[in-house]
Image (cartoon, rainbow, N blue to C red; front, top):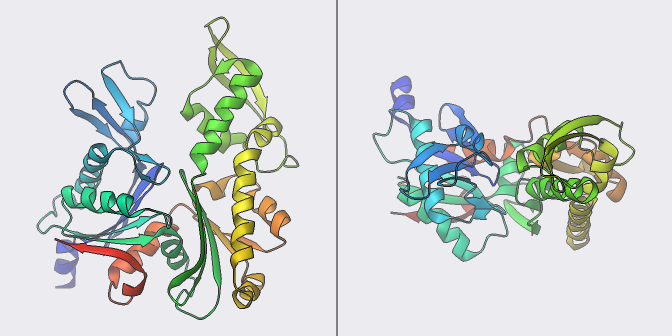
Length: 343
């Protein structure tokens, strides 16, 4: 009977991110992890691809086909395309098990506005959800890594995603101090593109910038120096060109967004009540999100705050795993759900 119940269960938890969307299926774990990208025909409105296949098309499509990211800065930028993307991801996750419309827990930035919140709920509803529950990403991430969020002690998390950086101090199932800035991995990629353009008159694409960040990017100039060969279009001659860049100059290009993240972290610490601040001194700060994978970022944050920085083993899945735990016991976590909509 348990196996039959597991087969029919189709409730989902979704980490709807700017860069990637992860889906957790109740009873099965994480069943989908794909880029938040949709490729569409601008003339007919036909969807060519969603997710991984669509990301491969970024910057490579003919005029009538456009590959877009419908999420920007952690929130919905294109309502209709987000709905298409969600529907496809739900279909892929449930496969042939769409007997009953699913309940869905969706993690969103803590700084989301009421209008943006409504857009997420409506998109999920139109994509086939029966009920939608929203939870803030910092709390979901904290639950995902096993922090005791229901205890009267301070737990501080910093979640660096593609579009936003969420910093929160959590205690007794609530956020005590919260700062959300719209700076993340996408901004870092943008700064790399601008640096290469300014210094070398070379135009590169966003995917190339992302590869540079992952391969040789570093948060500090004292990191071990690495080099990488990159290709782009010379802005003077218009001819494709190859050049070699070092991790030292990339760390310089990343300094602006990283300085803003450090400033936000310090601001959150300044607003933290003294008793909870004492807990953070003992426990440290938990770092998660795709941005946590940047080389030596933990070193930079430790130097700036003089606090232990704990990087989790798999920073990309913390939020969706926490959302999955909330999904499994919605009554227990009722107090931390931002808003629920039943229809």
